[in-house]
Amino acid sequence: MESDISAAITKPPKRTPFIDVASQVIRLGRKLGAVAPAHLKKEALLQSASDAAGLDDFGDRWFEGPMEVLLDSIAAEANLNPAGDFSAMQQFHKVLTDRLWAQMWFKRHPEILARPIPRPVVIVGPMRSGTTRLHRLLASDHRFSHMRSFETISPVPRPDFEQVLAGEAEDFRPILAGRIMKVARLANPRTLSIHPTGPYEPEEELGLFVSSMWGMKHEAQWQIPTYGRWCEGQDATPAYRQLADLLRLVGWSQQSSSIRPWILKTPQHMLDLPALLNVFPDARLIFTHRDPHSVVGSAASLAWNQTIIYADNVDPARVGQEWLRKSELQIERMRAARDAIPADRMIDVQYDDMDRDWRGTMERIYSFLGFDMEPAVPGMEAFLERSKALKRRPHRYSLEEFGLSADMVSERLGDYVRTYQIPIETPDASIAGARRTASRT
Image (cartoon, rainbow, N blue to C red; front, side, top):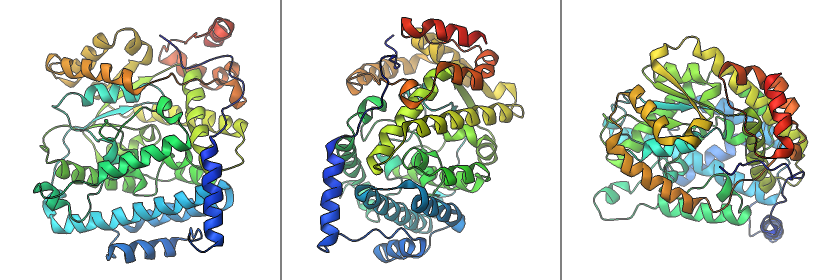
């Protein structure tokens, strides 16, 4: 196995010139009056979306609380460049328009909200702990329902979607997703190695939380620590209710059977397991575990590579400290929530086991779920072949480039390693001894 970590990396990568050029163009466009200035104010954003959609029902207004904190945190802390505040304007406008369209669909087709979501299978693990691989393996089994990447970007169909269902028009959402991905790769081509994807690839439901202005997606995109800490003190149940309704809408738009269990996964569940179980009380949980030295380094790298697109001054040491803290909190909350979950509703899976014997590990998971695995094997093998083409180069990073060390991670997360008997990864001889020592402390 080729590890993600490289001890030789001591400085995080720089962003591509694309963002600087884009910022210059936007800055010039604003001077000439060709590009609108950034107005990241709640009432203006709500009104703009309402005017564009010709609608005024946003559904449960709970989302306005997180939205206010998010906007305040962006203004005070994010230090957005012109490309960053321009993209933020577009993102807020799209999310709010989608909320309006969602309410339109719920009124037009009341049967959508009546769709059951029976016994979802929820993968729960820290960022970068193998949740994507496990999610896509399960999603290759047609007995389950899953989100696709274009649906997490645009979970709500456009108002003309009934023509799409009738075969009279093309769904624009995959086209839009393809365009967004092309721009993202121009902004930072490393995104392809960090999180390989395509418009139709299985994807996590993190985008559905954005509908409620909720979740870690924002924290991995912008420097907004005040917002992150505020969310950590709130009950996320309303955001999960919105997520469930959007899942119903996605299932209806897929014209899929409502008796098929959903496969869900996002690291957000680590923080909000009580809220998830409030909304999905019969969920079956698959917990993934990976050496936290790799988890923290990879999470920091992911956040760094996104944040540098939107802001000019990003401190790698602050990124490292924040994602060490965030990873520790995710694990702490996950462990506390597990105490109230019946043992027969959850299973633990090691990242290392998936690397060494994916088939044997999946057989254990299928036994837990009560499904025969054999019908799913051809689809899983096809996914594994396809994933080789998607991931063109390994994701390389280190703790050191973010001001961290193996000892710092072991001190904070060593008990997690011991409790769940997590194998320590030793990708490079120069750090293997330090890792082994850290694992025993």
